[in-house]
Length: 120
Image (cartoon, rainbow, N blue to C red; front, side, top):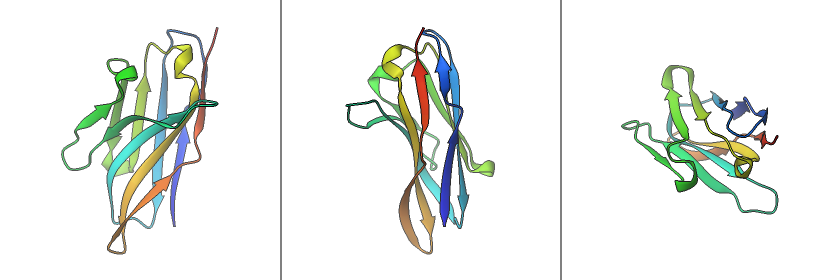
């Protein structure tokens, strides 16, 4: 089994910051790309940021470029999302997704999500 557990969500005022973490655990040979997604009420799930295991390259949604930063600690199987200058439109459930190599195959796993609310 593989588990992804997110943490760090909460309530923050506009202009504030939050740092999310996602820990991947279980029967893992290696972890490939890890991504953060978000879904606001009544909206489709959106890719926020992704980081590659091969070269550490990152990619961001246009709406968060310059405000969010994704990073990973391979020794701890952890990916972080630093979110700055948060705005009400950033309110959503944030979930991480990992592309995991195990038993010779690649699988996608999701965490349960953590709520981020930006409000005054």
